[in-house]
Amino acid sequence: MAPSAMTRWTKSLSDAQPVSYWLDGPGRPAPEPALTGDDRCDLLVVGGGYSGLWTALIAKERDPGRDVVLVEGREVGWAASGRNGGFCAASLTHGIANGLSRWPGEIEKLEELGARNLDEIEAAVKRYSIDCDFERTGEIDVATEPHQVAEVRETYEEMAAHGLAGGAELLDADAVREQVDSPTFLGGLWDRDGVAMLHPAKLAWGLKRACLEQGVRVYEHTPALELASAGAGMAVRTPYGRVFARQVALATNIFPSLVKRVRAYTVPVYDYALMTEPLSEEQLAAIGWRNRQGLGDSANQFHYFRLSADNRILWGGYDAIYPFGGKVRAEYDDRPETYAKLAGHFFTCFPQLEGVRFTHAWGGAIDTCSRFSAFFGTAHKGRVAYAAGYTGLGVGATRFGADVMLDLLSGERTERTSLEMVRTKPLPFPPEPFAWTGVALTKWSLARSDANGGKRNLWLKTMDKLGLGFDS
Image (cartoon, rainbow, N blue to C red):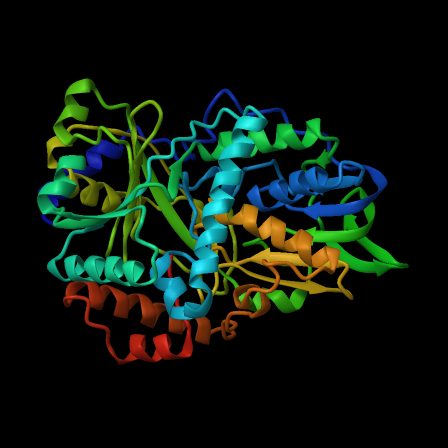
């Protein structure tokens, strides 16, 4: 990138606030008081992101008489649930290609359950009057290199072979640019019904309100410090008290699990995003985008982008940063060198928007696992359930994970718990320094693949055979 271009593009960041656009608004609810003393309940949910909120709410929907408590270490929705791109996808498998490679024998069932899950999210948004800018616009997977055009077509053909292409439309360069105009777009695959756009923080805040209305007791600024057996149930220690529960659902995702053996299955990946100022009518007309779909390009190091309700463009992705040792720290949330890179990519994609400025730039950790999609399990003789590893597609899939955790705690075999996806685990990540070295080599190899027509080197081919991956 030429120095003059770098200077021109980075000027667009001069007013950007280092905070999530979604969390930087007047609608943020006041936190609930912290737990002081002891409390007792039937079900304790640990974690106040989507995973925990859906678990608490569905538990009350299944059994209104069940006494449910939710504890959150900071405030509901402050972490990944308030920082993501707002893509609410039906996919439970991090996309159809990943699902086909890992669970070809049950992909039709997984897609059916995912579609049903997205419908149920939409129904819950309406039922509880959650104002989260929910738009069922779909998403276009965009090809920006010639080899990606062939890959997108192969994906469509695989979907068609499994009878899963009903809601999909293959787009050539003219057709995709008719939807959203960028000189970099060479083709695309439009999933018309399988993705909704929404305001992430407003969804979390709305779910919190719904939980409180259904009688869930929510304690914020109450981190769960220790989990132990207590008679026929469990006890969770917090800074100022304890919660005694018959059952516990762990929805901590990227944060260290209270079941220590689970920790090796996830690593934190830091993802970053920019948000523009609202576009004018003229700027919108310059790029089209009348149907407001979400978009993502098809590279290994990919971007995701969408319009907000007030016609800003969110532009995120590309860099996926793994910190040595897998630590989750606040200082990693802000990364100016990535913001500069993203700004350059934005104006390369949309040169007609030069002069637009960014108002927000932020980052946060995603819990990734080696198979890119969630895994599940139980501990303490079935009294504790957990779900983690959503790898960036948790906006929708966490609701499915909540159902799975509640099924597991019930001890009943259901269509969800019968799935191979639910019954198996990903391969764990190795200890340091092997994890960092492996991730660094994989990232280098993915970048080389993008620059070399999609050809995968020996390292990536080996990782494919082992079922190991690293992705955002």
